[in-house]
Length: 357
Image (tube, rainbow, N blue to C red):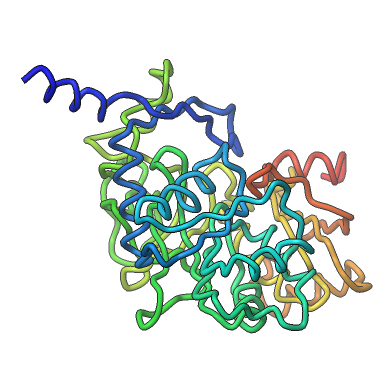
């Protein structure tokens, strides 16, 4: 009896104490138990059909749940292999993945873009069966380029530290993959609710809330954050989205929505349009203070070829409603991101625009 209780207590013990990415506020401490992590690991392995024959190339840092839970533990849980490079370089990746017969790898869109930029003519690896993207939004244009270059399905997923990583993902064929969507719920119950926590009508946008075995019990020593983040057993992700026939489409972080003249504007939508331009390598949109409308749309853009700011404005005007077209555009050499590829929009705006607002 004592042994049984001891085992149970071990399952509920904290295995990892991690920090949130802090993209919209100060980072918070997230305690994840053995039970949380086990639930997430087994869900990921089952969802992608991982077996002992699979070889995961770990492209993400191991101090974050993306690399640790998805790339490493989900593979080891089924007896598979993991390739962990001493130092990941876009040029060295291709030879290493080929040498070790990698069957899949997962990374953020920024790293995927870097790998594409150094892809050899024979980038289609014989052993590769799929590629996963997570940690920030993958534009449909980039997804198409990746699939054309790699010759395998690319699946976008949705995860966060508080959920021990994955909460949703596009499935592998023959099930449909929806570009611009983060897929169907995996291992969690998921709802879209209004500010009062009431489920919204089908197809309407609201806050994404989740519950499940992989979700943490609460932030460490932060009762205020816990009171704000949990209600009736549900965890508020802070993300705005809507369900499209069961597939989740994210609009953006609630605190990062651009509010122009009373209209909520998704930075993701504008970024997708900008990234579809052949000269655009990377783009981040954010709100810029404005006396008339409260905020106007700003954008920081990295280009590979010469592209004038006016040309990019016209490109957006042909594809977006007038109030969503960026009014302030700056072409920059690089957009600062965290080690896991996330971006702090407000800080980027302050850094690249200064007093442009």
